[in-house]
Image (cartoon, rainbow, N blue to C red; front, top):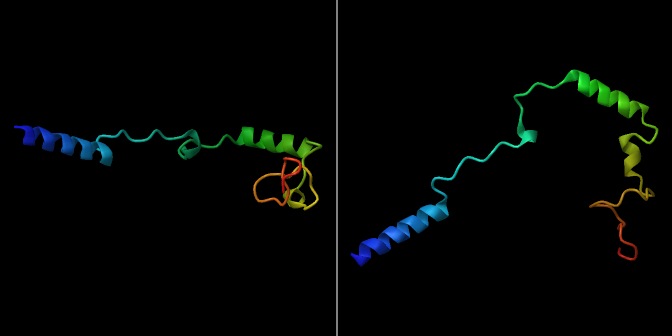
Length: 83
């Protein structure tokens, strides 16, 4: 009898480790490709960006002497004294 209980426990452990019965993952909002784009909101965002005095072209964001650029892959660190 103990052998059957042990085998049942091993089978249950195996099924749990394999993930049998897991729920399907919830779709993230950014993965939603069914909802159509709102063209009015997109046009408004583009107008706001065009009117922004601090906005700059993408090629200007890659200047080597830019102190605002401190993210991964840059040659200098946001923390003084490091790198």
